[in-house]
Length: 324
Image 1 (cartoon, rainbow, N blue to C red):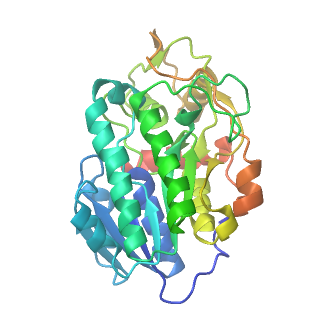
Image 2: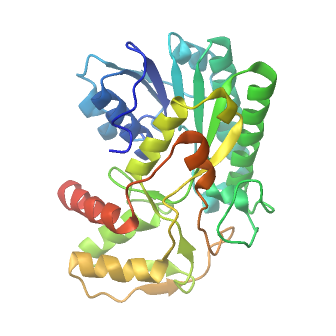
């Protein structure tokens, strides 16, 4: 793995917020495998208890059920912690358009609560989830940090505000913050269910059930699909990064570009199916094309992703075959 050689001081303790979610639970698993202590925090609003049950008997793991909107809980969760990996948030661009006030509460106020609790508890590194959606309507490819457009949804705006707070907390308070601009992460434990499910697990489940998936738009939109192992590497390398690299946001992706219709064909081949998709309308707030320049993360974090789309999707499909 791209993070197996990373070493932290003996007895280091990590807090993972959103630890019952897709990315959070994978981070918990990886850190425990490296031999460090982990505290998880989640309120199960989008995370699943099944994602954390396997860790509960591990003596290096403890779990707090709580909400990042509760500052006292954030303070309690940060006690005795060295590194915070803040993944707790509500995702989905379309859902945020329907629920802007709720997204403000969770994604902005909740993140600010966590940053302030981290500051007051003397946390060494605060690594937080941002999103490629902050690029908004900026048309140029590849997407490069410092060249952003107008955001297109409340979700995107919450992540942009989080990044501004991250900059401020590093500059004003000396808290080392690192924003992870994730590009379409996929992999094991990603939820295939619900109206706002991510496209890859949703397609896989529907095809396995011989259902015809709906492709929004013409299928010619492109994304920089990023396998979960690359994201784990980025978070852990951010915890090991220099103070000079703090107070900034970084593109976390593979640096590739896949068209949705090609992904659909790839899934058909991998699953041995012959099902025509249904083409629907474009989703409001969606970006047409997304592809990351990851040179900044390589330079400042030592990020060097090993998992391209083909390698990742093959392992992901195997996981869904066993677990769905």
